[in-house]
Length: 271
Image (tube, rainbow, N blue to C red; front, side, top):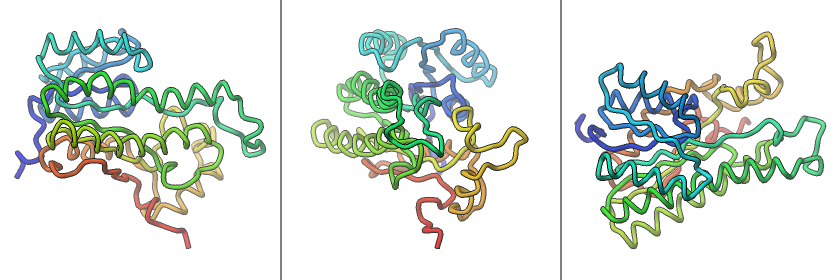
């Protein structure tokens, strides 16, 4: 049964690998025996991550690239194929909200900084589409591979104050379904595209709106917990198993799916 969930020896590209979520997945995948390609814009951070990953005895490789630059990604793809000969898994982890695209409780949509709107939608839509376009070609050529994208609870229903992020993550859900259908029809049933939809996890990007300086819950956090049946925030490590499952043969007939990892948030009406 354990072989069914195995990703051992699979070549796995993780964008945004130097971030909290990407780093957690990189460590999890190394421990599971995958060959991890850590991709990001900061070579120094990537090198530090790879050094840490190798301490566990796993195989890791750092590649500097910008997920919003096709030429940069194509150069990275050539390096990866030259080293490993194939690409089995792509985890599109790069993304997230930016403070300037978050409205205060007193602001409306018409107070939005549209430059920030462009920045957050570009990062979260094209930051997934471009790597899928470049690294997915290798999967199409070999007629096998697994892509996992990051959606959000914001794709299920509107979440106040984060209009750009919400719109972008809704687009990711749709793109996941579209790409899953396209590659399966044209390149066979061994290429799969899925997404996970994290619930509420406290990280660097949202800490200020979920926690007060003294560590207590903000009013927004209290509303989140009230709508989460498990009555807590998630731990970043709790995403690892769901992502590995989607990349393994255990999910061989799953494509175009959106898997919530949310403590029940998406299932609960709050009534």
